[in-house]
Length: 420
Image 1 (cartoon, rainbow, N blue to C red):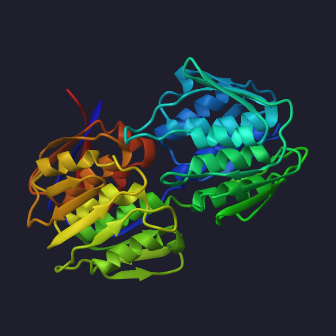
Image 2 (spheres, helix red, strand yellow):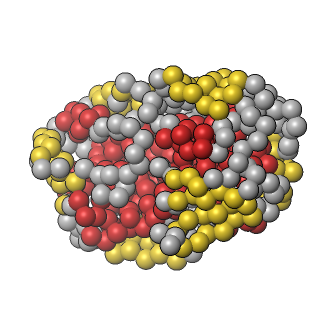
């Protein structure tokens, strides 16, 4: 098992390009199951999560080829059963339910695993399938859905902590081949949902309203193959911007959609960091007198939960008292204990972290607990005195393409080593 060693205190400078979006790639790859014709998807990042998704497609019977970020999928003849062995490593594998139900009118998918960041139920997905006329059973760790015919309906997907992104994806993919019109109320507005809708429309679907809280889908008889470029990964982009804020001399993040990361750049600007936004690039410069911040995570276009841990790392050395409230996954604070091992002063009060900025962090052995917590520990290590040793970096490889190599290109002293 690999570890990442960070020799802290070395400033970052230069430019870096953002990879394709993980959270777009996974449902788009799943959506290729909706047609017998070949689909080509460009910009798929080289991650363990995308590898897992391709393994699922292959298990289901699809023919898959991958080269230099381009994935070709031909799903002429497919099965409808995805067992535990092929879905257990990734929660997003649940998004094959929608396309399998839409095309095969039945599916059996094992309940998946993924990051340990609190309860992430799929009850809204199942409620939506039932709304389309499917019978749903959960037994033996498997979700079984069956429908002789799917019929359009009005479905509300807003849950306790806001809209469900994967639930919205699943409903769109099931509804595109249903009879009649489906209306998704309380839909997720994330750019990744819009990217999936654009892909489906290229396949011949009729989807309107993606990016709003109300999506309208007119079912069609069949979809065809297409070619698509995945959007840039806004969370990777935000992570590099925070890296520039923590220890940068001035870095530029390229291949970026500024509107997708506006809540992140607004937060960094509120801390006092100079942010320069161009068409598809954002530069961030250092600020010796950064200010504390009150921050709340919310569904898009609010501040993303996937950037909360990285901001905690930044605010740990920002003068004053910062307050961070997690509204999406209230238990998503596994990184706090590890940051405290490095000298951060943080206290949890329910779903809120109160952070007293300190002058210095100190390198220490720390353990990654989930994908974004891993990134936060790496960012803290860039700032810390001494050497930070991050274990369980397979979490990082789930969602960041060559993170250590990209940071090295910016001047970080970081290396990946095999654990003893």
